Length: 120
Image (cartoon, rainbow, N blue to C red; front, side, top):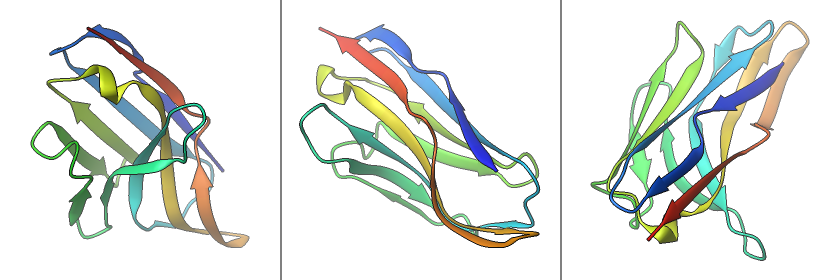
């Protein structure tokens, strides 16, 4: 089981990017999915999460600009990022808090990270 992220890149301030993360492997169930980000030298911070029921939660710094969504059939979580700011520059990580697999539950699964750079 692994999470594969795509969609990072470089953009000017005010621009948009979309991040996607797909879970692959034999998976029965997926719990909450989310995006986190990390700037070198700082702790990883929550950006947005979405529960299996579709309830969302956002960091105050991205409310109104970012939108998280999930497609359970495709085992994918996406993050639409609009009105990007230089402060959004970071490595973004996909996370799933719990998966049901043939080998039992897996907890706290992370993707490899995708870099987002926003220039002023």
